[in-house]
Amino acid sequence: MTMNRDYAEREPTRAEIDGLQEPTMIEFGAPWCGHCGRAQPLIALAFDRHPEVRHIKIEDGSGRRLGRSFGVKLWPTLVFLRDGHEVARVVRPTDANVIQRAMALLEEPASTRTA
Image (tube, rainbow, N blue to C red; front, side, top):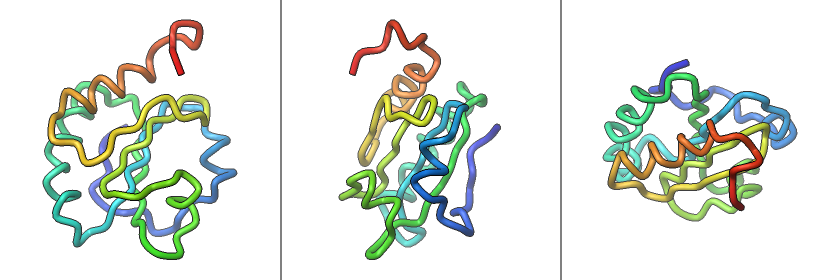
């Protein structure tokens, strides 16, 4: 899988997200958000090292249920899921290494992860 450059046309439901089995990163943001635009090259670098991670890019905002269900307050917020459960979160990244470390947590066996 590769990094998505476009926001999803349809916001998935929380039940759909919770049912995901593959390692996934959900990116919450908006196309006009400056912080989101500056984070794109950092996210791309992280995906170069972790192409197996699914990327779901969600346009967030007032009235958007999925972002509220994850408690998103700032953009971009990157939520890293394994088997539908959050294992890491990065808010307004300024360093690709932070994103790569979060992605690496998706590869660890469940018995070695910490909450």
